[in-house]
Length: 143
Image 1: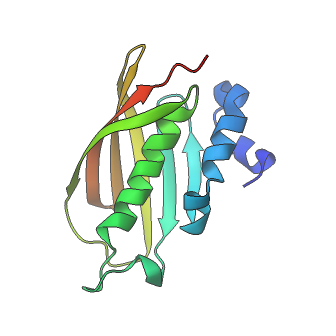
Image 2: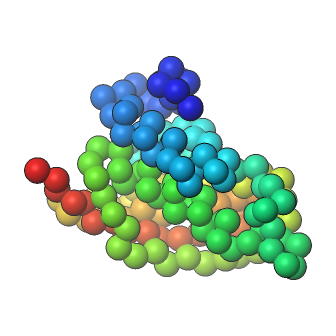
């Protein structure tokens, strides 16, 4: 993704942070796994991932790690927009298997303090809830 494409999916109030968001969108993990930013504003980030054969497990459904990767990267973008943040905890629940197609994720910031941010993330496929999580990040306060 380049900066012009990013401008079209990021809320104008976040344009001061486009370089941060671009770096996250073009991270090696995101590009290797086909993670795409759909939209971002100050409280919500939406991403998607087209399921590929390498995302499948031995049972013929999407591997939990692939689902978690999409969920975690959505969380990472949400909490790294304005300042460097690292994950502290993620409580994930898998609701049903994904059999292929496209998985879509959506994060919602539910609480934020000076040092901690809490984010709900949901992953859906075909309109059905695949996984949900509550993730907590620690703001690194770089000087």
